[in-house]
Length: 189
Length: 194
Image 1 (cartoon, helix red, strand yellow):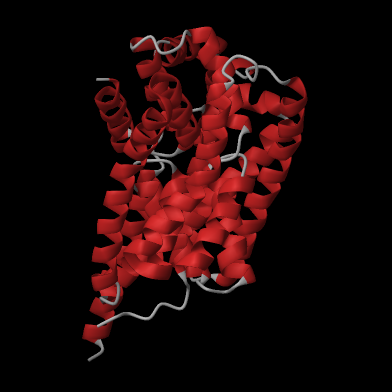
Image 2 (cartoon, each protein chain N blue to C red):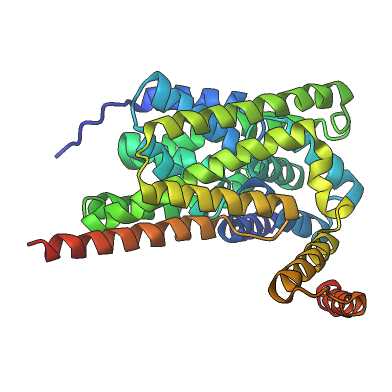
């Protein structure tokens, strides 16, 4: 029955996908393509729509897919299923936390967690600002060869240090030899 | 024994419905709005509580936006607060998506809306940063906190730039461990000076 399938699929997604919105898109896409609920082309257009409408992407997708597969009941099933695992876990977590939050060690742990959470927020904001104005940065790994930069840095530093230590010039042949080894190491990674 | 909560379920419903309706751009945008509504505007929770909520939302599975609604709702009004907050935050999205699904093909490609949302992306970035800085102002800035913040921020920046696969849960765990160590060591200090 479609409702069971919807429930089970989205429950699994809601249980296993960590890290929020975008981490949930991949498993949803897998399920959609696997069950033939949409073709790949439609899915990417659909993704765009879900990003543009208010609300968490995962919810938007669950509702839409549930609805097209099983009407209003399907929409409800999928949406509730995707939310249920997290809701349950958080509820349990908060209940436990409430009981132990005055303990000194717990306080220390929480005091450590807060700056970490703040770091995540700030970096997310900064990164979004950067990629908003400079979208190319997201593709930085494509147009910057980091490995080459690292190798060049190493090849620069070694002769300088060698000269400082021994007063002799580092031979060009050794330099080439080192770069070959580094290249074999880094580029096969 | 009935527990008295300062925040009513009705209040929660309206605030979270508004958040759910007007937040575009995912989890962190919603958290920025929650920070504005609950910490800044109404001062119902502290910056520390808000960061705890962020941490919980990042550590548990599921969409960050929903998780933070659940935890905030729980803090405001227990179990039913969690339910109301979660449901009312999802309700706008649910309704909109359900209606859209009835008009399947026509809504797939709307360039003007995409254009609007490119602009909204910018607002989202600014809102998140503003929330971040507001929270920053309110938290304790001792050595261990600054250390954790610096390490986590540096690592996350690198993760973004190099597009590594990195679970943000690890950042939370890192902070927790450092916090734990600090707590353990200061306990030892206190015992030594006895």
